[in-house]
Image (cartoon, rainbow, N blue to C red; front, side, top):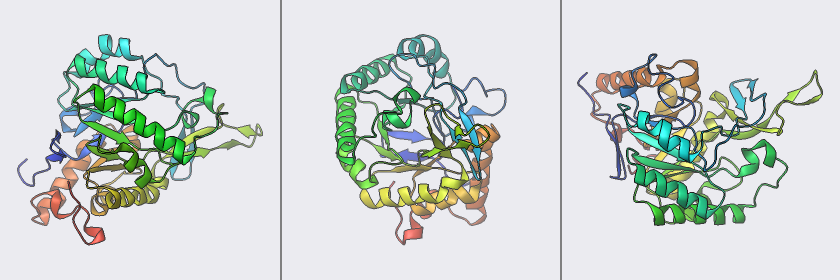
Length: 316
């Protein structure tokens, strides 16, 4: 379909066919939904977060419903680096959309091993560093203290610096939703990244009243969905104020109106999560709706919209 240009460029380092990314974990590894949607309609697929060693994930239950959202506590189940390279990446290379690998480690050395191996393997368009601290992710570490803002900034700085020393692949910093101010987190990245990702699920707890206990074995889960959208928009706004880098926003995007709010706030691209769980065709539908919206208003591309809620278009 001809019309507005939806090509999205991330700091000249990454070119996406559309501004809608399949958020980490929500679209699996692609093959799970390949017969349910046109994967060429994705701006990019972000893989479930990869760790150095295999993880079975947190014990069940892992999900709980909330008004306007979904709480989840998966513990990042994944096959580990070696199995990912041998069994998953060969299939992922054949996807008709850019591949972004989300990854997470506990030490600078582990970050380096992941980045180096993924860089050498080929077929990866970019890396996303999941920078959420361990106690907010893993049930077995839930009793640990969440790092102070200063300690978390130091961890972020060490992680992104080590990845940048190890690979030339574009690096996106997926910032924690809590525990550190957006501007402080961006400053900790110190020029090592090509884009900022905000709108992670927010730490949350759920109670099972019938059993008189918390629903998740590790107590803390993460809240996604429409309930977090205003908070995610705030993070986008803060990030746009703090940096000239492209900002990838997300959190509660179910409709075109939701996505437009993120663009108007200054997001260069939008990550779609829960909507993809509700309907695998969510991103192609959003893309078609956005194209029609721009075409009806004779807007040639998204640059005319980005950041205009604040009065000045944001830098892409």
